[in-house]
Image 1 (cartoon, rainbow, N blue to C red):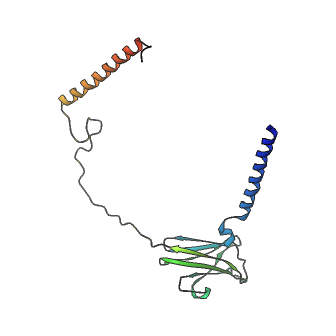
Image 2 (image 1 turned 90 degrees about the vertical axis):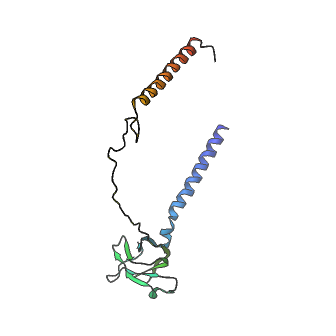
Image 3 (image 1 turned 30 degrees about the vertical axis):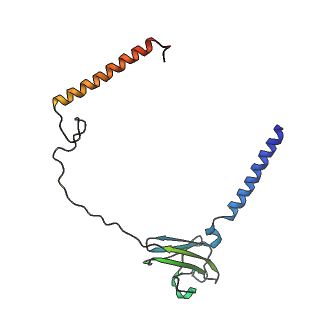
Length: 181
């Protein structure tokens, strides 16, 4: 019985490990499409690793809006980069949904991906000058905004002293008869 549960657990572990290796080998959706598109404000950028340099060119990327149907109708930008990573970017893109297509210089399509550009909202910061309090916040003096008189402070001291004396009397009574609840 003990050996069979050990074999069952190890079998489940092996099955989980093999399934995990297949998931890792599949990779994220970015690796399957061949391109990665991101937006920052009104700038759209694309990166890829799929293109090779042919006659000094990596390829072309095109940004299409919803009314444009093919690659040549969009805003085209040449890819730049190295053999490890090629990229392109478009600035001042208005809000909307776009499709990015990357065509390598050898004529193959590296990938197609949709992107949504949101309007950027910049907060406005305004500052006004106001007079600060003359004495500040009197922290630790007994109040945040009022200076209390001697009678108030003596009354507070009497209440604190009574609480300490009551606690001592209660604890002394309690420990003298430990069997009482």
